[in-house]
Image 1: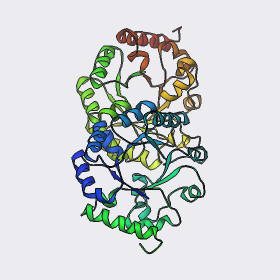
Image 2: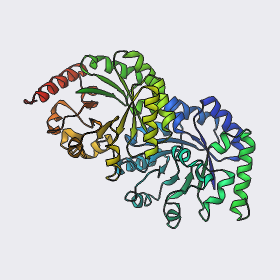
Image 3: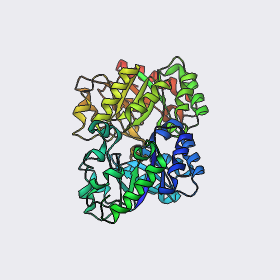
Image 4: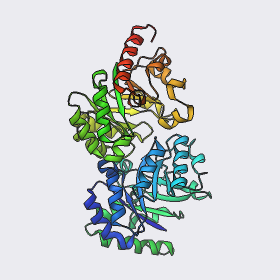
Length: 219
Length: 219
């Protein structure tokens, strides 16, 4: 399983500092939406440069102007860029085309996708789909997966073949058990590492908890 | 009616150049999503500085992390920021709260909003709702409102009281007639001005066509 470290709500320098502390224990580095909207593509370029050995995910949350936005990301050095599943189908198609043209990958964020939209998204087998409990929903429910909030549609997703599955939203060492029988391809971890008093130790502990979880033992 | 000039897919310097040419004929200046994602809040700050007399709209297209993103916009000098109507209701609530706290306004983009979500959005009477045919949809249909593509839900919207109405997507002097009996509070114009050979003349012609349209005569 790929561990994706989400870096959000900090300066670029602080993102690089946090990423460097966690680097030995994570696989992918995510440039969070808040960094992109505050600092633009400079954030993607600087994290690309700081972590040459790690795939970089640009959490672009594209909703329109898909070809332009995805080209910006890939040209700034991102390997993966995100599009909202709630966006028009024509935009998601344009993301997938741009990814093929420029050699990148697409992650489709399922946040607030309607029941009507979902089946079509689960047919995008070349993409990664991300079951996502949002920051704002976590604040409402008091702590995301850690607080036992359901990850919507997750059970249904895992009964299907198709796209790879990522899970995001309040994931921590303590909340891995709430995944149950779900085995995501990508686990997105943010605050559990970046807001820890000792981010390096938190990243190491998460990796260790994940290893035990994958072995089926107690986490 | 307020004419909002949308500046997209250009450098900040080019956005300022285009805005300066159109300035006498438009009311609000929009920092497009593509500028925000490419250049970050620098784009909002620089357009704020370049157009001290005009309200600035940050087309943030927020979908999560609403309080943080809206505070970024207002603190960078935006008067209005946009949130996707397709986002979770808790995020839209957070935008409205942040707007009240910081003295800004909220525009809710109705792009790809489901029939289930729409009634709730139309109750947000302190917001501006934006009926939006997206860039990607325009390319698919070959030219937006100018090509006679329907602005989804517009007729229903205008039969209701509630939020102020903005209309976006392929609006031009030639397409004003397609609004029919709809009388938006805000008309968002982009390419019809910014991609014209003479942007100042295009802006002047649009304003003149709008004046005739409002008088009910031929445009």
